[in-house]
Image 1 (tube, rainbow, N blue to C red):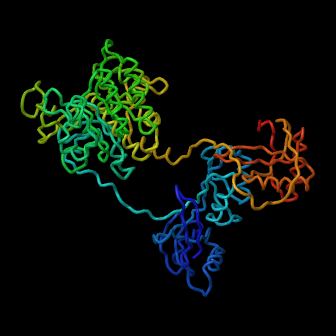
Image 2 (spheres, rainbow, N blue to C red):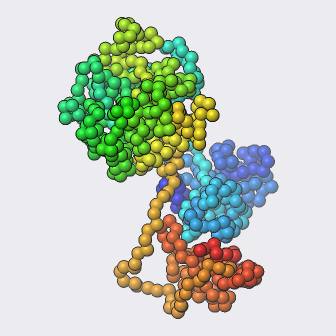
Image 3 (cartoon, rainbow, N blue to C red):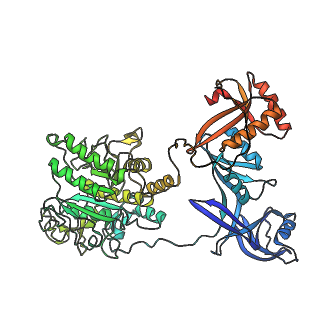
Length: 626
């Protein structure tokens, strides 16, 4: 079998040409399966082609395919390929996705397309286009390989179609999943007999489906709080490096009914999917419990330093103060900033704070920190939760109580509410008893760990994001809810940039991972012995003013090619050579131009001579290269 190596996605694909299958595309609506030259139809539609085997005529497959391509009912015929031994036929659709180097202009791009007789299908951005082969082009597999060797092209990938494996994410079977409307709101909570607004949720289950998993165990979510029950069945098997500021050890304080807040907060972020109870937003993430919140500077420094130094990726804090007498001093601000900027090996820990539940027109002073994600609350009908504090610092809002509460884990020592007495009201606001160590919960305390869990999902698919980039993704992908008039430049004091959308956020994190970024590498000197050469050249160099016109004929990554082509062009056309040195994707490249003219018409005359001699090019205004 013929083999081709092409770049595909983030790796390399080795394709083997099938010795018996071809792809045929019929004109109009003709069905080719009954054609005399078709032996057997294998797939009725793959990339717009019928995959068939041809009748044996004692000829090679190439010969048979060439004959079939001439049939009046056949629009296109193509070879079929296999990737390794996976047994799945692949058909090139004829389209090629090209990403040019950043500074390649449209004229240079057209030169590349013309060289291989490609037709533009769609322009995605100044650097990204989709083209398709024409009857004068080589096959798309070969074209992609040739393009990839061109200095102007950063990436070229032929569009291939094949059958995908069909599978669905198996959702958790935890008892209260149907009650967790914040994960996916179907418009009705059966156990509570309560109507909600369908779609008023954080789109978490949609994100799981996109990821085809429940997050990564490589991501660590720290919850700084009091009253964390690490023996809870939804938390106990995922605890990682716990710490208690009161005991100054890994022995967490428990049993005091005054402190129960940390358990439901932690569960909303990371409760494991174990077939019982409830499930968190990032069930596979590890859980770092840090117990003992405190106002003191020393404690603030210690809690954030501990998280940053012990591997926390996300830090969720559902506490703070709105009393102006206790606003943050510079040492506390610095402690939070240090974790948010220097944690995660310099990428920064993602730090979240609750906006607060006082219904004020300003947020919790901790949540107002510029390096923090400030989380407000909305309800199951996409309305503003009236208790949620407002302010310009609000980043996003997330589902919580306001009409119908959240389901969360309960610490073993949690004695429940005293407002309504015993019975179901003790733990369940709707009066429906749900046995086990669980309860209703809410406030911005509930909204914040939901967003923390979403941050963990974001980092699961793209762990190289900085804390600032995670915050930007949340802002960029949030859904606008409430009255549009409440938003100024995309931001609302109530909702921030909108209700958080886990699915869109994960999709954006994946998109950013697929992109590339980097810095231009400095030029390096040659080291080691020089063993061969490509000729001896005499030349002088002088600075060329950025004015007038020239004819650009190519871009070269190898300086030897610059000299060789410059010598040939100068000898052939008797015009001076101009070289423009550029940095593309960290490598030095050379744009070679011929002639220096005051008027564009003079450059046009040279271009005609060059094309008549078989040398392609285009007019370049030297002012554009300043």
